Figure 1 (cartoon, rainbow, N blue to C red):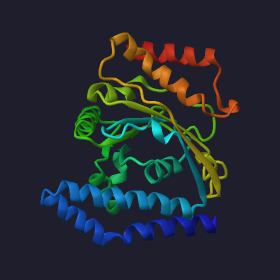
Figure 2: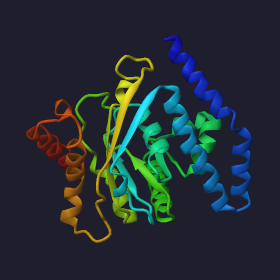
Figure 3: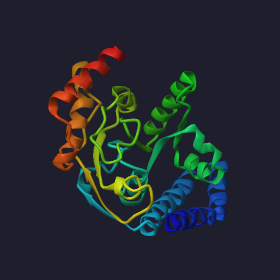
Amino acid sequence: MFKTVFKIAKIFIWIKGQKKLLKKAKKFNTDGKIHERDELVQNLVALWGKNVAQTIEADITIKGKENIPKDEAVVFIANHQGYADIIAVLGFIDKPTAFIAKAEIKKLGFIAGWMELMQCVFIERKNMRQSVQAMQQAIENVKKGYSLLIFPEGTRSKGGPIKHFKPGSFKLAFNSKAPIVPITIDGTWRSFEEKKRLRPANIILTIHPPVFTNEITKEERHAIPQKVQHTIESALPKTSLRGEKEVLKIQARQDKKES
């Protein structure tokens, strides 16, 4: 446990050590120098991800980099195994990406400051009106060219079977008409969730071919959540996969609730 506390403290100290750069990025933002702001923030966020991975001794492998569209914003859809998911995506996928986060994170001022500049969106899950407004902001951010990462399970699976993907999570891609890029994350749960302390872990991110949403029918839109979930599951070890019947039953129950 002492090693875990030491590593976490080291990560926070590194972040707080970037105060001057945060101030500079905010100045760019105030002055309307968006390109300069984005370049500074994106470079630092990628460096942060690599620094954290090294600190927690995570060996990260990326497969399928060629599947990421280069000249447009995308919506990354991934399974959610553990806390290290964000670290792996931000530090090792070569496309600047923000994400949707709980509003409680705003209490961590220096972290929230960077996240706001990244174009992350904060959601108060118990406040429906705010959630709708936040999702609309996320859509506008994607339209402006900022890629976003979403975990449709809504919670960490911690190495267990992938939970049912919530269809509502895909509205961001549908309404912004951005390509969906599925990502299979495997191994992050071993970094912390397995033993409730930080441990070395081998992590693999498999990036799948994009699913384009700009010219799809309502029927095709309805089928995409299940299709993307199956794609993501296909790159996991067989022991992590749900049975086909169980997935279909859960899908049917969830669709009935949301209809």
